[in-house]
Image (tube, rainbow, N blue to C red; front, side, top):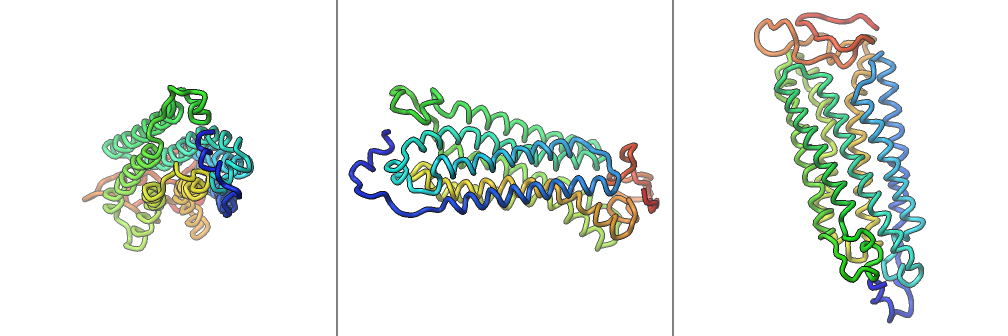
Length: 330
């Protein structure tokens, strides 16, 4: 293989192995993701909340995360991720073909895991927002997220022409690939943009709620947890710019893979965290109010809030009446 030409003059393979950290991160987020989603559905059940599209999206995100982590474990065991590329060339050159092939499902599952976790967060907004402007803004961000997913998937499946050029370039002398480093580096930039939009979207409406300062801060922080993926997204963006993923690829793939798994896992946690507040309030006060005992929105004596309750009867959401205290435990 052409990429192994540099290994021809070596008498011993280069030392070093960091595949264990890749494996450990994958296993950690398998456990964390499963527990987070399990607790989310327990919280739904505990407060008698019916399932919605956000729950469906969370399930898809979890499955995508588990598939991603399974691919990562396969990379460690069969693609020699964590070893230097020259070591792989000398000891198990066929593993490079396996690694190149696994990059495609890895990238697709990465895109699906991120997209559906964020769609779950945005669907949660739709369950709460009443104002048309906020709902249309939410739909707009969802559209951007879906478009990003579609474009990323298409690019991944056509990254090389023909696609087999990715793992067998010597068989396709006329083949070519796009700038894979640029694709990986800029691929996370739309996620940063949508993360910022998700962060700021609910703030104006939440700030106008007539709650005590303590409750208002609690509500805002609850919604802000949906944007904690912004941190990992920025970190991933920076790391991918600092590391050349095509130089000593099987070695650096461990580091780049770890941050990618973490990004997906944090997005999944972000999609679950807002739901835990309703469970906490239910346990604390034994009520099924939304986000506080009393709430109102806007100026004057508006008869309805511009938010819906997150916890509700089996018949669906109801608008919270101004000055109405729904303290009946359902």
